[in-house]
Image (cartoon, rainbow, N blue to C red; front, side, top):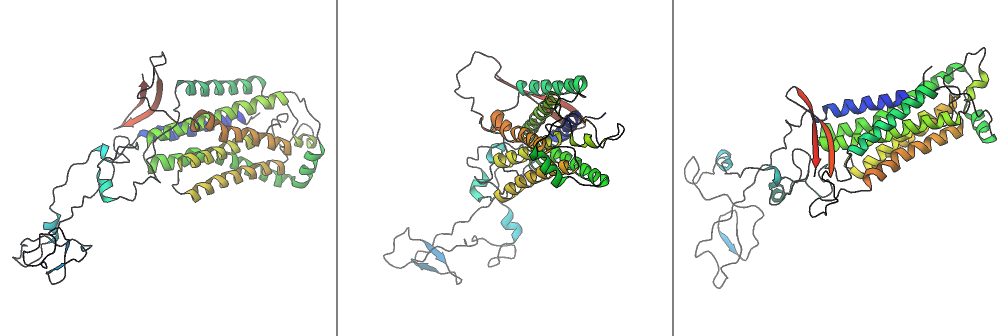
Length: 405
């Protein structure tokens, strides 16, 4: 007999490891695009007899097409070419190769508002400030993790929840029915949505599976594509994937535990003939595990886009959130159409998923900004923080450990 919550937790773990393992693959190869320096040439001082009598010496001078100065005129928007002799002799304009020979100061990582490793730099006096690079703005800050980091408590919590879900599945995965009754609301929704042919119900069941698996993968792959492949902010990606894993582990444990405690009979059981039923886990109807995982993924997508603006556009971030919520709701409808759950089962699964996807990341991370360590009074503990992340470089792999004390 196949149960849902254990495969779901295993799939979430595999997707997490699959995205986190290559997370640091390019950590030693990432490089920020070089900023091209620009040197403006100041106009040479005007000849002594070119300005009108009585004009102050500090009056701005511009150069017309004829090369004569006009007193009192506003300075031209284009700086004149330097007075020098070109390759072709005096009177010839310097070639672009000559003008390109300009001594440029070397670039340091601290000069970038967005450093190559994805962290925010000082930007004081950097070339971006001088050239006004459009990518370095307050609207799109560097993708640095600015909230409470996952550490040893988070890792232990995920391990405990995962072990608890596996224990519940192995020891109590097939409970005896404790709740066989129905109510008018569930029966009304079932009569309106349940498909009449068995083949159609099987298609609806497959659609529900696809939607659930897609919503499990959505926050994992979404953050990998944006924070990892696009931004190469591997530390931020690691922290984001840990948030995903914490939420999915919580959903896996709670949904499995409640299903076995309530032990509600699924609606398709009344149509079983000779012990042959249309589905498995006949007494684990409330809550719907499919819907719980789908809404967990949707909530995580909304949370990440709300706080990190993964698409760097408010409209696109909102569209990603509403799309995830719509797909999760469609999964709930598909489960009722397949006759695998009642409407109240779907509502209970949605409540668990929304808590795991929306509220849990805020309680553990997003509502707790990371405070600077400078000037902080000691708490009596030597180790202030401990975190791990994968490290792959030059054909070798390892685990990087960061300790704060």
